[in-house]
Each structure stands twice: as structure tokens, then as C-alpha cells.
Length: 292
Image (cartoon, rainbow, N blue to C red; front, side, top):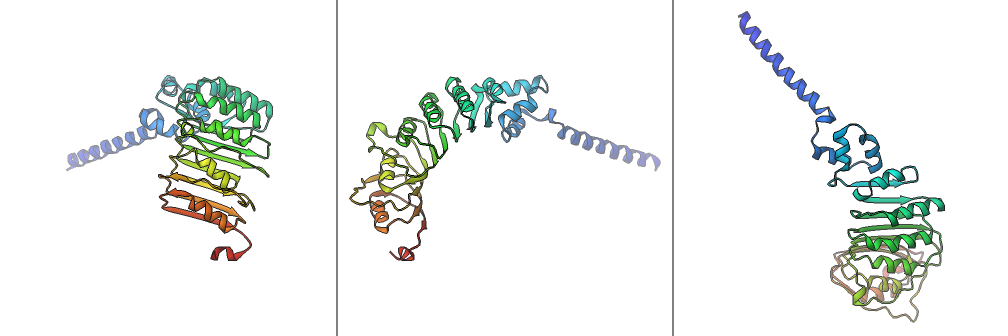
């Protein structure tokens, strides 16, 4: 009887020990597979990952230097610039934000001089117009770039030139252009066949009228998703909107400020697309607009 109890007790102790060891292994980051570690790193900012894990031991150092691992850098600054430079060949996503003009020049030099061969997503915010143009001129050498986001605030700039530089990026799929500036105009010509882009999602987050929009989207025949803001009280007097065919356009979102319904109607009649989703936000004091 006592012998059986001892056997049961020993068996119980052995099973508990196995469970304890399993728990201990699971809670030790050293024993996680490379695949799981890469998934964890993917949720972290690249500089934070490099600072936290780069000097732990030889294994982590090799993991982070592996060409199969790509970094997402969410905060480029002068403080971490040296680290980012050491990672430039492994950067997948990059966000540049700074208000200092000197820092902008230094950071833009990094963009221009670095071999960012794996960069697929780039976001730049609140830089000077000359810095932005310099950066855009160099982006054409990034053959894997698919996503571009630009945020500008109340700075004079040649918006048409910025658009033309962006439209020269042949691999781009997503583009958002956000500008907070009054009296904005986009003086673009209608695109030729040689100027067509591969952009599929376009978010125009700045004031423009239907004529300007028609010329912008003449460059994007592959467009699937379009979102834009119409400027305040910009009428289409004596203006001819060109007919644009966008066979892949299925989603259109428009925010309009005090637009005449006739102008909106003319625009919609000249856009040939297979829309599945149409979202219209109207900001107008005249409620009879809705009944048009």
C-alpha cells in the first residue's frame, strides 16, 4: 500500500516538474524561435529594437543584422541617426518628422546618401518645401517604394512640382498628400500615356477643385480608391472637365465645402468608373443642396 502511494507521489512529482520546466522555458525569451522573435520585433520601433536587443548576446546581434530582417523606423531624429545609418540596408519603413531646419537638412542628406534598397514605406512630415523637393527627387532611385505619405503645414511650395515628382515613382501604390495651406492651386497638365503611374490608392488631403482633381487623376489609371477634399466655394465657371476613365475605381470619398451641386454633377458625369462605394460629406449652410 505504501509502495503504491510512493509510486503515485513520485509520478505526480515528475509530472509537476515537467510542467514547471515547460513554463520556465516558455517564459525565457532566450528559448523562443527566431520566427517568434521576428514577429515580436515587428511590433516595435526599429531603433528601440536595436537598442534593447542588439547588445544582449551574440545570437540577438546576429538576428538583428540578418538581411532577412527589416526594420520599421517610426521616429528619425538626430539622436538616433547614427544607429539608423548602420541599419540603412535593412529599413523597410521610415518616418521623418522634425521642425528644425538644420535637422531637416541633416536628415534629408541621410535619405539622399543612404542605400535604402529595401525601403517600401516612407512618411515625411512638416519639412520645408526645398527639403521636400530634394527628398522627392531622390526617391526615384528606391525601386521598392510602394507607399508615400506627405504632411505639410502652411509653407509656400510648388504643389504641381511635388505631384510631378511623385508621379515619376513607378513602383508607388499608395500616396497621401496632406497640406494645410490657404489659396492652394495645383497647375498640372493632363497626363500623357508615358506619364501614367501605378498608384492604386490616392488620398488628397488638401483643397482642390474638380478641374484640378480631374487633371491629377489623369495620371492614375490604375486607381482603386480615391479620397479628396474640395476647396471652399471654388466654382467651375467656364471650365471644361476632361472625361477620365478609371475602370478599377471602386471606392470614392469626397468632402465638399459649399460646392454648387451643378459642379459636382459635371464632375461625376465625366468620371467613368465601376463604383461600389460612394461616400460624400457636405459642409454647406444651404440645406436645399441635399434635395438637388
